[in-house]
Length: 299
Image (cartoon, rainbow, N blue to C red; front, top):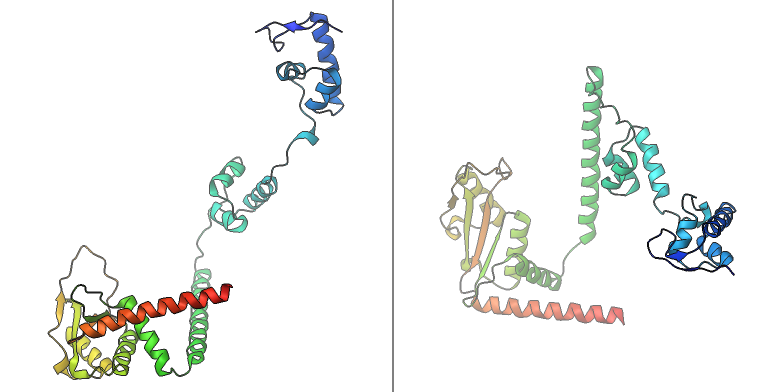
């Protein structure tokens, strides 16, 4: 065998060989590499067990294609380039392929940017606006149809169903006043107020124990809102406290404006501490029953 000894720093993997021996090994290694062998196969064939030396022997000769690991993103990259050439933006490519914009940018940065789309003019603009209006009206029709079908599916409520619903409603939206509990419920949705009042009446809370307070921005029509909530609740003015006006902050961009804005209505039950304690207990019972039912479904 050829005498091979260590020699650090000479570029041959720390091995002492004659120039002819090294060149002979290199020629053999390159030939094997061109035949399509991997580094492991060349190492075993030549008996060279130094990775540094082996790398030096095949330096400059690309590895055979079969040794390269497949890149899972190759298909995505090709598709992204294809879509970019079709004129798609990064956003559309991301929506189409589900990959990140940073990856898309790397894959297509050498391709020309798509031309900016010119807004339609004249008749084209009119047709585009008409199309948007028709699409909007269609969405409204579909929304109302879904809403109506869902509403009809509820049917009537039993007293127990209303009872459980009311407990959950209060615990989600009502005040949790401790250590001096009271029943205090505030909402801007008329339906929520109606359901809450129906629940109180189910619990035999008389109307004379109810006190209502309207809270509304000072720039709104307070008188119209007071009449609105009187109609919603069906209660006469003796149940209403003085309306609370909220100061308008010109620096805020309020969206709760217009004819559909009626402020928030607070409903307070006088002498409601005992009822509050029962509500808290009912809610704990609902949680326990729900967990028990879930456990049964899982076992």
